[in-house]
Image (cartoon, rainbow, N blue to C red):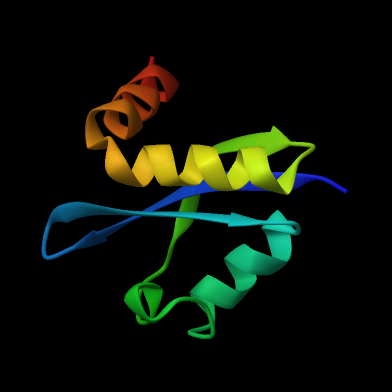
Length: 84
């Protein structure tokens, strides 16, 4: 089974907002976020995937998700690399 760590983004009040999470089904999870059935923080906004990384181990995916949430500088470095 594959696990994905992802970063979503949206604009709220002219500010870029991001959300980091993990899942086994990326398409289904994005649909849930955009339909208001995802995480409470993501309700009421249209989200798009701006970063994703695939893992074969749930443990490694969760560790990477935790790292992204803990080290905001790493998250923004990954986002800036994607824009180049």
